[in-house]
Length: 181
Ligand SMILES: Cc1cc2nc3c(=O)[nH]c(=O)nc-3n(C[C@H](O)[C@H](O)[C@H](O)COP(=O)(O)O)c2cc1C
Picture 1: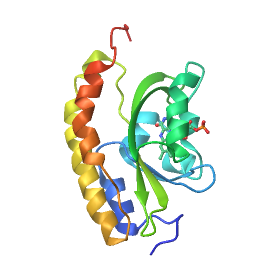
Picture 2 (picture 1 turned 120 degrees about the horizontal axis):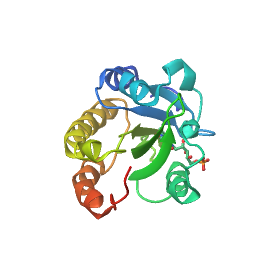
Picture 3 (picture 1 turned 90 degrees about the horizontal axis):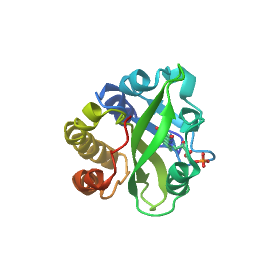
């Protein structure tokens, strides 16, 4: 069994090779990132070495509200469902603002302890990007199925993620996109 701060190598390889933005942290301390992939780096403008060891809140800034941040805070501190999707205002390394739709899921060890958090970032700033969400979700759903399977080989369990993604199209439909972003 890997130690809590250790990403099983096959899981690390899978995450790094995925075409959708993925980031993984431990649940220890301030939930530091232990791996991000190229798609995450392309979206945010940060290099992997800029961000590993750091909590992902460096993406937040002036227009990020408490209302947006608190659901992520609760999730990262172990409260509520084991998967969630969270809209939040974020900033790239160059300071440009984007609307991020962050998916997060806990990975549990054999004792039922949450050890890792897997996240996927999706840029939903423009109407055109939002229209791509179902395409992104199909890829995310596949990635979650794969991560679940690879994780299982290392004694990790991930619960309910695929269902959450299936439900998220309905979630998106309920969200207001009437702003002019
Ligand atoms: C793996 C992982 C990925 C995350 N990705 C993002 C992200 O893309 N954008 C963001 O604003 N917060 C993200 N967060 C949430 C923040 O890191 C942080 O947990 C959140 O701001 C709540 O904690 P705080 O109230 O201590 O800041 C992520 C957290 C984890 C564990």
